[in-house]
Each structure stands twice: as structure tokens, then as C-alpha cells.
Length: 390
Image 1 (cartoon, one colour):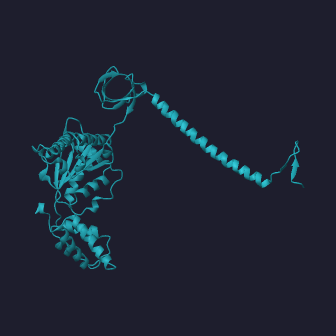
Image 2: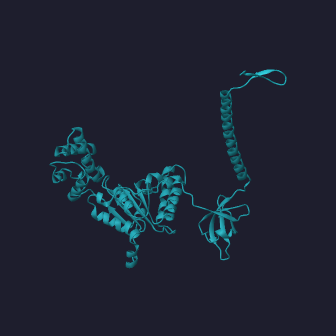
Image 3: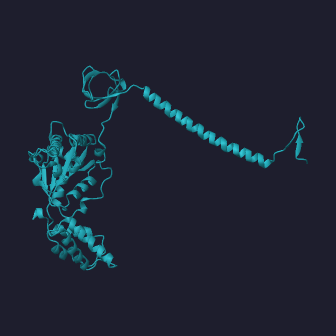
């Protein structure tokens, strides 16, 4: 069949083949997909621009603090920033939810339209422990009396409050652990966090030391506000001597800022405002440096010394840390006599180094000679005792 045909004018043209038409159809589909994607992107951009336009048209809201709720149902507010005070109304759906001390949003007509939750410094929010530490009291060798006193002061008021109500006694508000480094103060706090069914907020005292005036005091306020909102809660301050050292007449700006932060901490621990169901734990290596106002009853009702482990405690600690080790012909009693004046952390390091020495020698088990080697190594590294506690 002739591939050429004639049109009305007599001109001839080539009849396109089926393959060429398929290729044209495929090209058109690709272009259609591209155009559809461009349309979707433009629609999304249009929606975003409309949203931003509506946001710009919306009148701004101002943040205020509820001072009091009057008998008439009107609300006494103080606007943040300029500290202006006024009395206003709120919408019906919020009337029963508003309480004194809350932050609320007000419009240009000074009417409450929304409740604003308390805002915390990001550095304070991350102090809240989301997951319990994998440490129990069974993993702490010795310290039986200290552990029991800590549980009485911190754990039992939260887990067994009915016992205190039955006896009619108020449980201790705070507990301070002091002693040489490595004796288990922080481990006790971790075990409390594991056992107590409460919010656990942990921090180091140095985290409250800041350069700018008032910043540390604001963090202390936010910290205790968070603890009260999450109550029942436990606040653990490690190395409290970095913020709670004895106040002096030093005129430097850095020392003055630390003292401002300390005074805010004292006020939060036992001031006019009710602390609520918040228990405080703290730990330090230098109790002699702490300010006397911090040590008085009402702030720290119990001050416990976590001292160096005795023979029974050293035996318990060595058994705990060697329980998972493959040992042979190792006398724990002999190790106890060779590790006098050593802390729990040093005993743990001895067990670890003995195992590492066995690994280095490609042995199948840990021997007594491995422990002798590790004792010599740890003793040379740390010294026989801490200078501060000789």
C-alpha cells in the first residue's frame, strides 16, 4: 500500500506510524506529570501564603499572669513586660479552668482567650529523667544503714504516705549525702530514681552557675516550678558545693551572681511558698564548704556521711562486681585485706582491670594473679587514699 496520501490541495504527506504515535503519547504523559507536580507545588505554596496572610491579619495576643479570681467571677491580671494590672473577663469555656498563678493570653480587648502553659528553660526541661536508671539497691555493696535512711526520707513518703499519716509525723524534706569521691553517693540517687514512682529531676550544681545577672536564679525558679508541676517528684543536685559554698564578702561579679543563685535556692527549698510534694537529694565531697543556711533543718533534715567501705562492705562490693566474671581460685577474703581504704569505685575498677588483663593474656578465666596486677595498677593510678580525707 502506498504510504503517501493526497490532501484537498493535492499536497502529499507521510502517514505517521504506530510507534511514532506511541512515543508522542509517552512524551505528552511525561509533560502532564511534570505539569501536575508543578500545580501541586503551587497549590501548597498558595495554601501556605493564605495561612501566613491570615496569621498576619490576626490581632496579637498578650501574655498575662492571673493574680486572683474575684468573688464576682472577674479575674485580676498582671500583664507581663509592663507589669500593668487590670480586671477582666474570660470566655465561658475557660472560666472553671483558670486558677491563680496561671499564665493566660489576652486579646486587644483585654479578655482572656486562652490558657498558656508554664514555659521552662530548655536546659531545665532536659534535666527531667525520662527513663529510670538500670541501678538497684542490690547493686550497691555495703551502706545498708545509709540506704535505709535514704529510703525512709525520700522513697517511703512517696510510696507509703499512709504510714506517715497514721503516725502523724512529717517526713524529712531533704537529704544530703557527703563523703569521699567514689563511695556510692550518686549510685544511691540512681537507685532511688529506679525505685520511686515519681518524677526524677537530676542536675549538677555547676549547671546553675551562669555569666549573666539573674540567669542562674531564674533556672532555679524554673527547676522547682517544673518539680511542683510534675509532683510527686525528686530533685537531685549533684556536686552542690559548686553553687552552695559559704557566702563571703568577695566583691567580684562572678561570686555575687553565685550568691544570688544560692539565695534563690534557699528560698525555694524552705521559703514562704509551699514546696509541695517535692523531695530534695544532694551530694557533695566537701560538706565543710557549704553555707550554714543550706545545712539547717527544714532544708536538709538528714545529713548522711557515706564513708569508705569497711571489710564487710568491701567483700560485698567485690562479690557484686565479680559475680558475672569467670573466675578461678580467687579468694575474696584475701582481696578484701589487700584493698584497705579503697572506695567502691576503685574496687569496681580493680575487677574491671583484672578481667581486662585476662583478656590481654587470652585466658579462659580470671585468676588471683590478675587481681593482684589490677590492684597494683589502680593503686598507682589513684593513690592509696584521698588527700582531703586522710
